[in-house]
Image 1 (cartoon, one colour):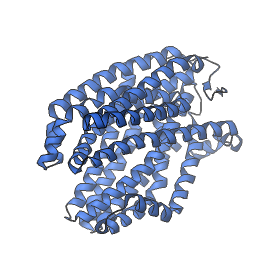
Image 2 (image 1 turned 180 degrees about the horizontal axis):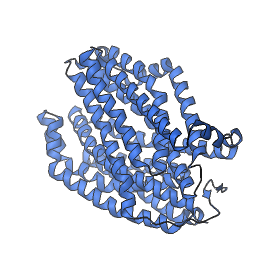
Image 3 (image 1 turned 135 degrees about the vertical axis):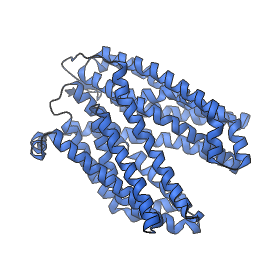
Image 4 (image 1 turned 120 degrees about the horizontal axis):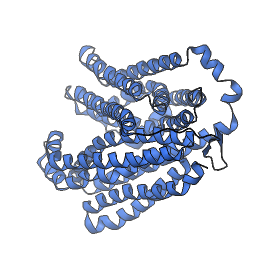
Length: 454
């Protein structure tokens, strides 16, 4: 495989293959199950610390979790970028199964993780200044952050491994590794907090050990796949590993995905900030409604992962029929999944609201605006699927620019609609963000297909 002047992968041969619904579900279902375990672990951590009856500990844990969500969101390019490149290598029938992409990404993950670990104190200062934990939460926040920072290199390695497994359509293995992280975390959190009395240090240490277990397990499976470490070293000669063109492409993908993630985080940060300005009841209600959207997103993320692998494989194989078929089936199943999720939220969202809060005012407000959260699986579905298509095709520049343009349109819509319609206007702007992003990507994909399959 070579690379065009636009940075697009170009294969000199065509490798025909078909895409069926079962191919999509073989990846989407395990990926969704794996993604769902993540919030469960977070809920358990919160519940474990919550049983100690100290609001300061709970606040420190919550703020620490926010800090790491920012770090890991900005590093998620390691998974996205690796998955797209490996899927294309599989489609091009690379006998090494994307080994060079794996090795380069692993090198970046280790270096980046070690650098962040070495910068623990400045990282702490930054988040302490940004999040401003109250006095009663300061100690818990500090203990949690410094303990969990030891997980960073392993999290980055796991992102690369997951990208490699999902890029090869080994979704069950990826699911097993993600579930391993969270199961170890859940068990050890209970043991460390209630058995050893380690408080927030205990839940942080449990997370570190879970990530170490998954990274070791993933590396062992990778070595076995290639028949031993000697074969891996022989398959990644330094001249190919440090190929400047390949490195520039990887760096470009990484940079653009970081910008894309930062823009998306900025959109949701603005949404939260505007809600906060409307009072604590609105702020709490929005937090609950966004949790409902987040739960739906785990199902849609699984479908996006399947789309990413199949479209990436089609690009690598230079086989447009498979690309078109993967897109079509993804949207068919996306519509069914998104529609079902929307109906479930409309019918039972009130129950989820009542489970998440006992405050009568918050419950009443959240129920009023429940319809806006319930529609997000439908309006967001196309954005999720197009994300998968873009990542698989490694159209990183288009993805970045589309997200930035969508963010600008969203901010304009929010500035206009919120004064006119209040919270309804803010939620409408969020739906506009999701639909605009999908629309921009749809136009871009149609324009770039000729280059993708030249």
